[in-house]
Image (cartoon, rainbow, N blue to C red; front, side, top):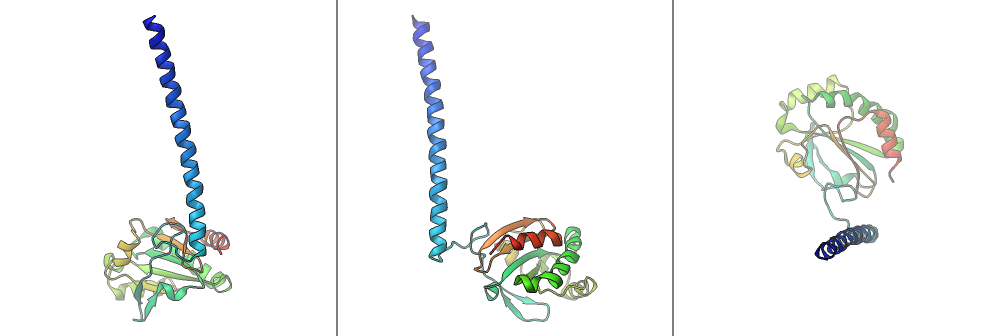
Amino acid sequence: MKKKIFGLLLIFALIAIVLTNFVRSKMAEGEKIDTSSTQVSAEVNNKIKSGIEVNQMAPDFSLKTLDGKEAKLSDYRGQKVILNFWATWCPPCKAEIPHMEKYYKNHAKKDHVEILAVNLTKSDKDENYIKDFIKSYDMTYPVLLDTEGEQQKQYEIVTIPTTFIIDTKGVIQKKIVGPMDQNMMIKTIASIK
């Protein structure tokens, strides 16, 4: 008799565990639905949270270019932005540069895209070396200097190159860790507003 009662209790316990897991999974699915509808309403109200994740407003910053001009990310609202973090000593960055340059020359203007290449100057060589490097690679898109490492920290850049694709409203649509080629840029830009 005790074995039967123990067996029944064990069966009820297993059923309770299965039902609990089922209910939790359904609740989690419901939360996901609620979250996405909240994001849509946030976009409508232009109150998108600032951050470095997809569907967040890219944190604004101001950096100097190699020629000493000030460039703010928010100045490029209305354009799509390829925000690329790189350094001269990085082999994947070097491999990516010719593709970015080809995209910039052949597609950026008609696609309403600006490439902003943020050099991690604090971990790179001096500015004269960076200037010579840019000339040797025939880079014509804007290069910004993160001399204090603030943007590297703010955008949590660990691996380079790391690229954020930002839409015309300043919202991050994609984060790409590693090098891109021209075709990848064309497809990625075509997929966003």
